[in-house]
Image 1: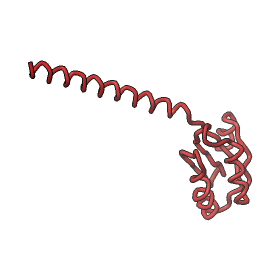
Image 2: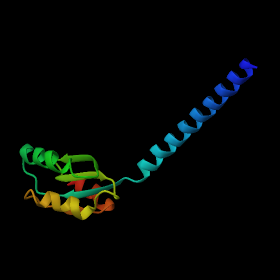
Image 3: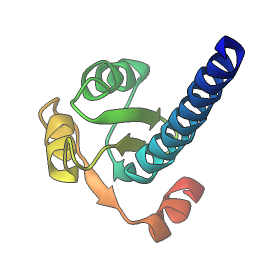
Image 4: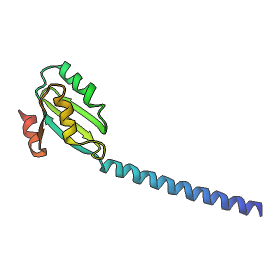
Length: 114
């Protein structure tokens, strides 16, 4: 009797842990789907400018990834749209004294070739 009860308890625990694992995987997938990326063409001139942008914009609410390329003057930001907007991110760059002209996805390749 105790053995059957233990088997039943173990089976229930195993079943719950499996369901929990599936729900966590679904949450991870949905979190990835929530992210958006925006690119801005800027007027960065040195590594000091790059560092200033990285030190300030990277810590804005909702920012998940920030790449600043001095060669192309592109600032690429991956963010959660439910936490911030493109306009707020653009404002955080211009507040530092740099240009932040949004670049459409099609034009990014053209800007990188320049």
